[in-house]
Length: 262
Picture (cartoon, rainbow, N blue to C red):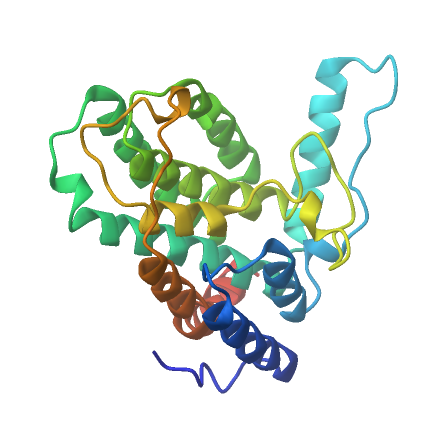
């Protein structure tokens, strides 16, 4: 692994990457906690993560009115997206692609059922939507509508664990591009102190997808007492890649996507 990273990263980001890399390597399970990732995101610079709540629903408000107001607020914030927002977006896309390619070498070569095939088709489409949104080729309202339609994945249990986590990685990566570090129905200012409030944690889902030991014959994992087994070495390899390669690459990619969106 290249521990140096990009020479263009902010000094604070480089410092946090070095500290976090050391902490992950020392952790017995090689975990990288959400609060640590939150600090890294904030070190990229001003972004929508630093903005106050765009809108709060008031009592007795017409649901259609609040839906339009939220869309207007999201559009206004997206129009003023900062460079750091694009770094976060590029990082989420890189992460999804990395997991997809890694799983393609083993579990995705197995016989898939119809749910799994649908999941993988959606993953590809979601990645395309995320790319189009960052390149300013679709409206944020369009991406939001497409994202909402894909929340059905929580209802299904007949898929391999790795594939379900890959799917949620894709959904949550598009989610963080659209909403920033906020849930659609719960807007709150994100700081290192309250970062645990974040729900759209695509990175932890990616780590789970890539480190879970595949069991192609075991699909009813949500209704079973059988624990999912994880490969700690693969988890460490993923976080090392994410910290030392993905973040610098996302920073470099954002130089282009941010300028093209202006």
